[in-house]
Amino acid sequence: MRTLFLAGGSPATVFALVPLATAARNGGHDVVVAATADMVGVITSAGLPAASVTPRAMRDFMLADRSGSPLSLPTDPGERMRFGGHGFGRLAAGSLPALRELGRAWRPDVVVGGALAFGAALLAAELKVPYVRHAWDMGEPAAMELGAADELAPELAGLGLAELPAADLWIDICPPSVADPAAPSGLSTRFVPCALQRQLEPWMYTRGERRRVCVTAGSRVSKEYEFDHLDALVGKVRGPDVEVLVAAPEEAATALRERHPGVRAGWLPLDTVLPTCDLLLHAGGGQTALTAVRAGVPQMVVPNMPKLWGPNRRLADYGAARLPAAGEDGPGDVARVCREMLTTPSYARRAAELAAELAALPGPAEVLPHLEGLAGG
Image 1 (spheres, rainbow, N blue to C red):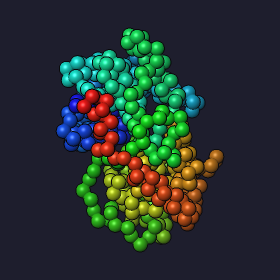
Image 2 (image 1 turned 45 degrees about the vertical axis):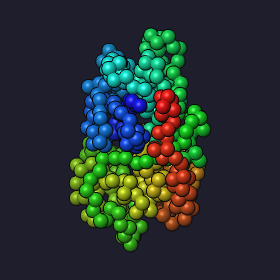
Image 3 (image 1 turned 60 degrees about the horizontal axis):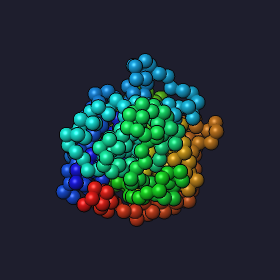
Image 4 (image 1 turned 135 degrees about the vertical axis):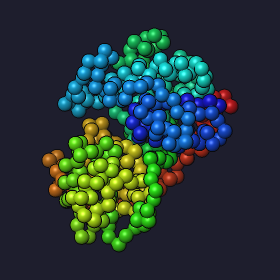
């Protein structure tokens, strides 16, 4: 079986597909993972064959129309989500020529696309092979798919289609208890964390005497972007009774270590570190949230994009997380809530229950027969 996986333009979109792609390769099948050119190194670092479908980065498609004219992010949350869908639609359209060339030359038996990798649906329809849609995280708002469909109207018309093709199989990686109720019915599978790794040090996998809080503002934080907010959070959360770890790129981490002596900051392997933590404070990224779910760690989430509120609201409703109330998203308020969570056992109990639910789902190797069945053997 030949399986073509299509990611997006960020590491998280690659990492979500790596476990199943690796299972397929380990099962003796041929695999290619395609993405934007700047993601090729991320794919190869996971030990998988990579193909570039466009030299342009995701940001280029998001912030410029097809003619190259710059676009501005809408301020209205609903409009912004539809705007994002248009960006993913432009990514699909811009990738389609290279995808067609790859598809015709390599002839995949199955095409697996990430949740917003709409080029996978178009290519599968053109090649007349099964199309599998694979979740990237805890779910994407419907407005993004509507925006992508609008953007891709010319490409759909060229294929004789009035709407985006439905997947032959939907693969979810979110525990059913916190899954999007609007998601299509399909196969619920176990989330397996994957990320760029580094050499482990004993403190990364050893729980200390103090309660441990991990803080992160994502992999793109820098001294020019989100640093002041992250710095303020660290300053508020840290104290003599709490050990603070900060997951951040090295440039930001160096500055944080200088400003907060004793705080461990750097590029952290969250899949190893989080099981030693009592709380995760983060910006709401889906892969980060699911890594915490897997580790059974309660989460304080301060979403930095409108689309992240829905998935993390479901975590909060379940009792494994908190979101800031209106007017309470300042560093002082967030730090206060974090300390409340550390002394309220119900959060840890609910997080552990969710981790057990996730662990009981079928893993990537158990999903592989479903792909083989679609391919006809």
